[in-house]
Image (cartoon, rainbow, N blue to C red):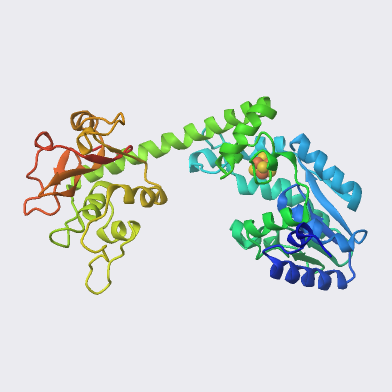
Length: 422
Ligand code: SF4
């Protein structure tokens, strides 16, 4: 009788996907042509390799050694290569950086220009660097193979790589590129890893649950796992982290300078517009929608949709919760999703009994000049949202929206936009 542990191990939650992938692999290996499995020491390649275990001896791992791999990842790759066979290709990342610039997630045109026209620091989109230095040599190898050949890779749709990464490479007809894990989710991958006890490089056990590519690449600091990677590298790869941070600081400063210039122009243009967005409902309701739209410089419809209460296309009215308006705390996540730079705070006056070190209404008012904000006040026994825009209070519910003075208000809280002059 199998033990409960064995049953648990053989019943991963993604059983259907495992079976479908096994069937797809059977077909692929049935073509009876050389098979290469792209392997860079990440979880997806590790799972794919395990699924190909029945075909050991009929496929090889293929890997581009950039010379900048994390040593523990390289050791992991070589260990797997010793079992399955390894085609090791090379690229020269340092030469690529000299020619095309530091890889970055965000860059300006001026910093990315070629032919020596760029402004320092020279930057390039990291996807181009990865395409040339990781996928490029593999593509070359496949293109020059003298007959039909299959490349398996672990890219998944959830990763949102255009064209499924290597599946989008332009290759001649004799090259067949397959992504058998395309429909797998991260959860599927980790369920399988747990159930099948698939070994992964040590950083996965340290909370960095994604692959680590080049160990000094500044663009890695823009990836979702960056905070954990930094914590891990501080301890394990401090010298490499310093190089990574130096590059990232240079890229960030260049992009930030450009962004600030643009923000300044937008802010000045808005100041001249003196626009505000009016409320569309009377009484309890949409003051937060209108105040946010005014302060952030977006339309009523955008604000309502972002807050989760989209407007009815026929009436133009938002689908508000029964009997109440939108609370300041409910606005936090939507604002983060919109990518707006902001900070939220309540004041002492909102809860005099609170032991929290909250600013007073006056302290909050003192930091408003030069910024735009949504202000929360309490009147007629309910909360009301006003906008603070271009140095003026805007009450979008009033006939004269500019009649209020900041000095006359007791603020209960505010959403303060931290960029853009007001
Ligand atoms: S990880 Fe960074 S340095 Fe390495 S190939 Fe990709 S973009 Fe280039």
